[in-house]
Length: 491
Image 1 (cartoon, rainbow, N blue to C red):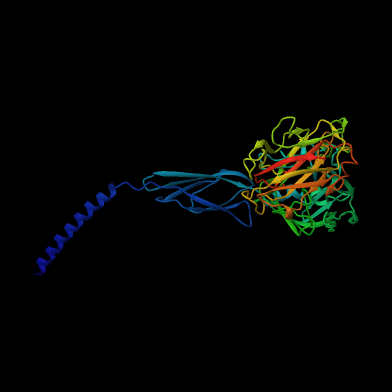
Image 2 (image 1 turned 90 degrees about the vertical axis):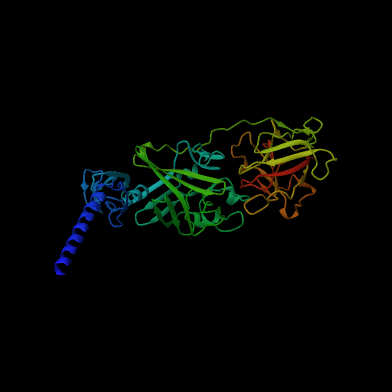
């Protein structure tokens, strides 16, 4: 029995050995899965030149790294320290036991985080002023249309803003020096003596249109932080500003705020650097270009005297000025013919309240920020024959009236356009109380020429007015709307 059992075990062993040989032989002939090379990297928080590589390759048994600076490694998960900042292409080659291989490459950018800050603060202190070549600031609907609605040039129209200095220091302080003059933005100083003029930068003059003291916007020291990765500057401290005082982080303000954040990019030029800052709101894109010169001889002088603009039109006192909007014929229009503007007005459409009634005008405001219907004259209007003017307006409730969109506001103004590029800064303005404006019905609005709600002078005391404007639906937004008008006339 013992012999038999030994023989049986021997036979079983032979069978198992044969099976193992056959199985191993079959397994050896099966192809291995192809390797996949992959990795991720992270830059050390304490050393911007140290790169930590994590290998995510599959189906591989050996690895070869090329760090793009002449150095290599065969470690699975190496850490590599570069000698200097720069752009490097890292390549990983992964192999299996059959020498099948796969490669994966990625370009990394290594930069000293303090080098970006140095571009802003000069390493110790760096002063920026508005760029004096071409346009320095402006507003438009987006990046492509930046400064398309309005832009400022170094042409003598606002010389004081070109002297303002904005200084960033390495200790985190931000210093504004107004150089003794401030510009009266209409958004802040409408209706005051400071509106659209340069005035002495003293607290007594810094009372805004609402009677609020805004002197915190004058010269002062504040704080800043610069996120070079996000491309954002944050100014901290009540009254700290760049660009324009009223431009804040997410909306315009009428009083100094505690902090504001804006986008910033810096471009190195030959002999100077350019800093462009941007404020983006819904449908509104403001940007400003500042310069800091390492070679002061390259900085142009500030133009302090404005060259004469346009022409002084002949004075004329019309006996009538009206537009019924029934048609465009001479019997329905006397001088008040619409000129090119962001508003489309169509005469002779059906009355929305009664299609059988006389025809009226359809007023469609576009999506421009400032949609004014303009009536340009070829003479300076002398208002000797008029004491008032009126217009009938129909506002459909079907328009979208919401916060940030259309309003029911109605505004009329009379301005000088032939000799003033920024005509809105010196116009005579007439406003309708929004609470008195109904919807889905016609209403007549009458204004006394000598009783404007805001502006410079009155039509009777001025001889330079040649442009009449009508705004329905408000301004400073990009929502369109449809309204109806009739019987616009001066009497």
